[in-house]
Each structure stands twice: as structure tokens, then as C-alpha cells.
Length: 141
Length: 134
Image (cartoon, rainbow over all chains, first blue to last red; front, side):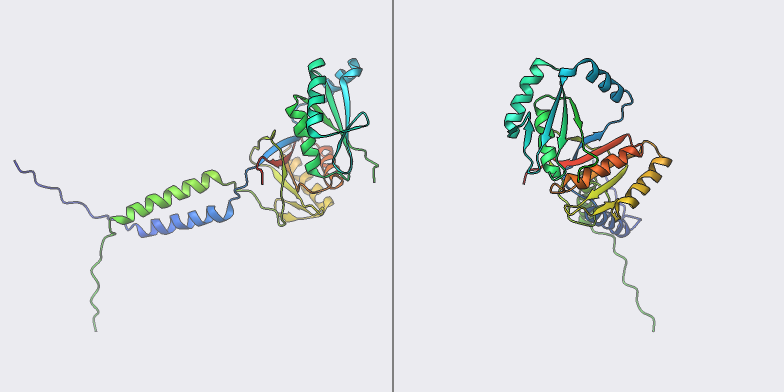
């Protein structure tokens, strides 16, 4: 038996305006979007209990806080000793093994750059420090 | 004189493939791009390997290496920036504030502003970093 072939329907709506709109949208998204891969490090976190908790912790564990300075040239200084990021990570990891609740207070020089600070925070986080605080001297020139 | 209208031709079949490709490109660029206000100056965020995914929304404060400031793409001085962030926080106290500081910006340009924003009552302030190596 021979089946009759259906006659294909022609498109009733023109596709050209659709293509125009899509091309405009495409160009819009290509031009206005930024394609840099961005992450974030929290400065201030949304938790009401954190300051009270930290205050209580600092009061009950006087030995559990470490002051880490960042010099103007970006060098991390722990107890007067300049450390590279690797040495800092090893030192912090060892201290955290002793005291998992160790909190680290970072006091950067205002002449240090953002990258210096982020590198030190990176090293601290990689070493396992979870209680990191940033301090600045208000009257420092 | 009466002009003869050319016979209307239907779209040829190959146009469907073009639409497919354009749709694909459209979805691709919508997915991988971020629709953020760009800063009016050149800015390279600090590199960090321990950064976490950045949530969308909020306001973005850009700080150039020389200390120039821009809030959501519009240049402003420190007082104007703090005023506008205060206004935003008043209407929406949970507003997220992103600090996009150049990696070479001195902390003397960055930290006092962050302290000022924190003093305004912001509960979410974050520093923008990039995991990319160059």
C-alpha cells in the first residue's frame, strides 16, 4: 500500500523577528556580563552571638589567642619573628593541633597591601584556623 | 505603474540551525556571566585559594590601588559612600556589602572604610577575591 505523504506546513509566523530579538539579547549579555571568576572572604559575618562568644572565650582562655602582625612590606610577624607564608602555616597548624580553639588576631600595618592581608588569611585558613580576627589601630597614621 | 510584488518565500530550513546556535550561545553567556556593576577604574582583586562562593545582590564598593572609590559603578568619595550605604542599610538592614579592593590597595584605604561600614550596622561585609592565577 502506498501512503500519501503529508504536505509539510510552511511556517506561518516569520522567524526573522525572533532571530533579531535573540541576537540583541545575545549581544546584551555578552557585553554587559563580567566573566572574572570571583570568590569572597567574609570581613563581618552575620552572627549576633559571635562577639559575646569570643569575649567569653578570650576571658576564660587567656593563652588561646595569638597576635600576628603584618609588616609594611607584607611579611607576617609572629612574636617578633618574620615568617614566610609556608612557615606561618606550619607554625599555626602546630599550635592548632595543641589548642583547636586557638584564635588568631591579625594586626596588619596600614602600609601593607590587600594582597598581603589576603595571603596571610589564606595561610591561616589553610592551616586550619577558624577563629581569625582582624584588628586595626584607629589612630595609626 | 503597478509594481509586481515579489512572491513571499518562507524561511529556508537552515535558519532553524541558526536559531539553535544562537539560543545555545545566549544560554551559555547568561550562565557563565555575572551582571554586576563594573567599576569605572581598572581593578584586580586579591588572589586567594580559600575564598568561598560569593552570594549575589547587595552593594559593591570598589577601591582602586590609588584609593579611588566607587559604589555600584559610580565614583564617590568616602563620605558619600558611607552616606549611601547608610541609606541602603536603613531601608534594608540585611544588605550585603562587597568590598572589591585592588590587590595593591594599601590597607589604610580599605580597613577604615570597612570599620566605618561595620559601624553603620552592616552585618554582612565581604572582601572580593579571585581564585585565578595569572
